[in-house]
Length: 207
Length: 120
Image (cartoon, rainbow over all chains, first blue to last red; front, side):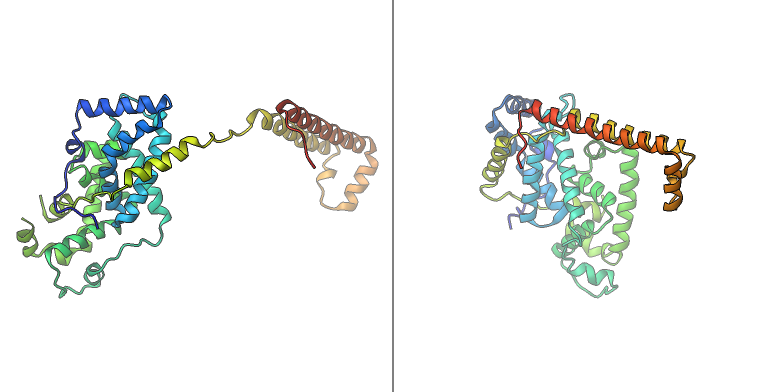
């Protein structure tokens, strides 16, 4: 599995979310719309990592994440004429990808998330000892088990490194709605993981 | 920042496998080469649809003029009503035939305009 040891990055910042990048994307879009399909390769190269990572947070499987990202790129390619240039390309692109991932997750029933230790925790078996990596993995997988409207906001919020405004723009919701869903989603998550999250060892190990 | 924030913010980064860009571009090129989807032929559909609606409306109007006999599910009384309103029955049949002819004529005209020849 291609998981790097590095921690998460702010995709917009990491991907050099600068005027140059915007120009690159805008120029590539112009060329694609003029009939130069190969110009889309620049967009795929620049944005493949964020899109695959965003998909991974929904499905927790790298192979599936790549399939989802591929479909998202196809949707983005087909939807380029709909991109209104007053908005950032990345925001529009993430928004298209989000819709694609949501639809795919809706079709995927029951969720193929392996819960491992989470099943035991939910069942109330607090004696299960999980190391910090496994606990972190259980928490991330637990997000995928939340009702979609909370799951989507939580995934996006942390994907954008807790940037509320960007989360709202990508999900096309008002910031107030995002805040409310975050609050409720986090509450549901904390209830699910109550036995684990209060362990002091988690805070010290993760710090 | 609490534990939940810390864990969810520090997600490991997934690196796309080698060849991902090439696979995506292959699909994109396939997509680009596909002919655009055929649009729904509203210009041909709407006249026929409006004609059908008009015929249905006309039918109900004519049946209404027979004093509601046409709406009666009792077949014998409907036949009796039709028998006593022979003129209306003939009018109804004539309207239906005329409507069918109009729809057929429009269909043939549309086929002729598009250059397609009907095959059996």
